[in-house]
Length: 282
Image 1 (cartoon, rainbow, N blue to C red):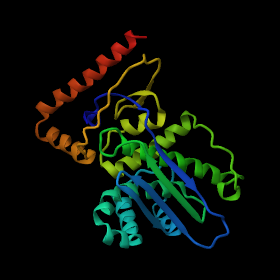
Image 2 (cartoon, rainbow, N blue to C red):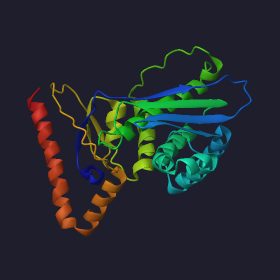
Image 3 (cartoon, rainbow, N blue to C red):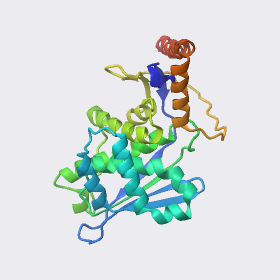
Image 4 (cartoon, one colour):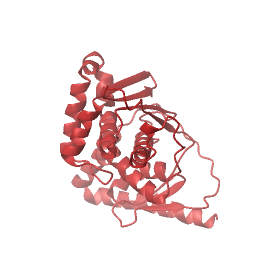
């Protein structure tokens, strides 16, 4: 979590994925609905909202692809979410509370997209274990941001998804598109984690391996020609809460800057050494 405070990180993706399937119903149906379901290790959770009601919030805050999430937006979305899913809160309070940040991120990304459909359903499933330090939330937000980005692009064109029962496959996003998608994914990460570094969503969106440094003019540098590496990734099954861990590092840095600053510099030096090794291995 030193990356939050300016240390460089080298990040790479693993061969696990999160999937987000977007589906729309016929445009002439009268109902107004937005639905999200996602598979957890212990089952499936489902939520629904009024799409028209959500878009009123989007208009209220003038949200679009360049928007940045604020505490006011988050609280407004939380009230909207809890009111729409009050039964779920009463019958499955723990699951509801655990999933609330993910739902709020979903709602924010949808607001930025301004979908023109009368129905929108999104099903999310993942190969990644949650809370295992493998960037499951970044993969979640990146998948949703990509889907919403292409949904908005499709709505803006003549061949909207809602007008075509068999739309053409989406194109692979170019670098400019990925930059916009990454911004959206990072806003979703901010809702879930509070003060994330941005490295996880950057690796997820851009793919491959990246050097990431927060707070500089060009935070993301793609690493080309990485030699083949065998990585052993072990799931300890000890859950982590990134928001709590990042906040803890921040508090220690405020209280003990003479202790924490050298540690952060040392972590940056490890990344620097790795980059030198990778350059020599070409």
